[in-house]
Length: 239
Image (cartoon, rainbow, N blue to C red):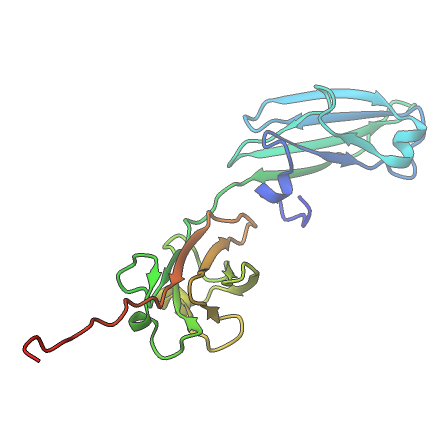
């Protein structure tokens, strides 16, 4: 939970989606030989406790719940809370106050945004000269924001140019974007969609919600094609 907001998102969770990690720091007035008592509250509410003797390494580096053993495992489950808590019992036999931290694992994402190359009016993936409009070097696109995205989420837009290079920018979703979509109208460098005869251009987008989870990708592509047939030959047959 790198930002310590109590929500564990998919990016933070790392490799194993079923567990997370924790570190228990030992206070300065605890000494080697004291006992660290650790309790893990699983997502289903059950608890597991174990105790270890504080060593010089634990005193210096903390006690790492790294899922390397059953005792050191911290399970997580989507939509539920996991907690790690600890006390220290000194060698007199007195127990410290309890320290704890909790996270709710949340993998919720929005739906994919809908991307449309708007000049490709018949949506056949081919942009012809008539569809292309005024500027032969660019086209336009609209990115529709799904209903389950909210104002304040982040729209991530990637343009793949005809030469294969990619440009990515991100914008915060506003109410206007929710209502009218995000328009790639070539009014700025970020909003420019280049085209080149015989090559493909792509606009794709994802949404990162305020938990930090990224949606599936929406995209649309066109191949700009100005190919024309040769002119017909016309002859007066009675000449």
